[in-house]
Amino acid sequence: MQIMNKKMGWNFLKLAITAFGGLGIELLYAFFLEPFLFGAQMESWSNGQSIAHWILTCATWGMVSIWLIQSAKKNYSLDILSVREALQTWQWIAVLTLLAISVIIQYFDWGGLKIVMEFQHLDAIMFLFQYLYYAFETVLFMMIIVFGQKACEIWLGHEKIPYGGILCGLTWGLGHILSKGSLIIGLHGFLWGLLLGVAYLVVNKDIRKAWIVMFLIFVL
Image (cartoon, rainbow, N blue to C red; front, side, top):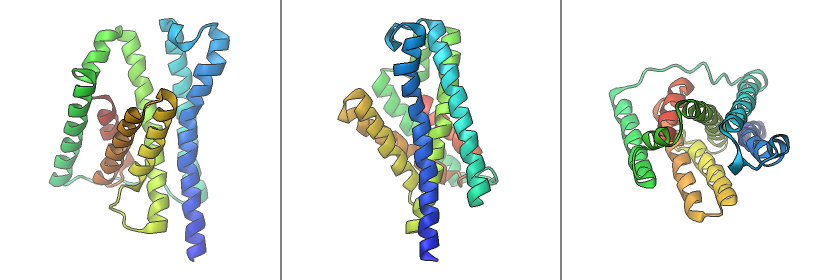
């Protein structure tokens, strides 16, 4: 039985890693495919080229997310869409607290409200597609958390520990360290991953509610 549980844990971890790999596909587009197609590096793209990049990336992330959900259900009997639970008062308070923490951190990082600052720097169409991009990105971060959480619960027990958030934070932080070359930005990414993981547990692992809360944490 322990061997079976260990194997099943690895199966869910592989799904989490696949979700992280799905996020990484954007790098292939941005640094190899699209510079070849557009004849310019990302920093020199026109608005139309940036929007085309976001659309392609969102479509890819959407397909990866659908595959992950279907694979978990078909191969491992985990239907992550089946969880639907009402929140108690303390959970609503916890959600609002998480949102407040994220707003405060983002406020100091951006010198104002992130969503307002981005709206001021982008035209309406660019802003719309930027936030569509964030919406799909949130789904894959959520997949890392969902399957990472399941894997560690199988191995370690203690369902109240945000294993998925820790894994998401490590992958997010490492990705930012490698792409931005900054340990501080990496630590910042780890913090966001942890907040998202806590949010997932607070809403009883209901991914519909979790996605809304995670998206708000990400963009506010």
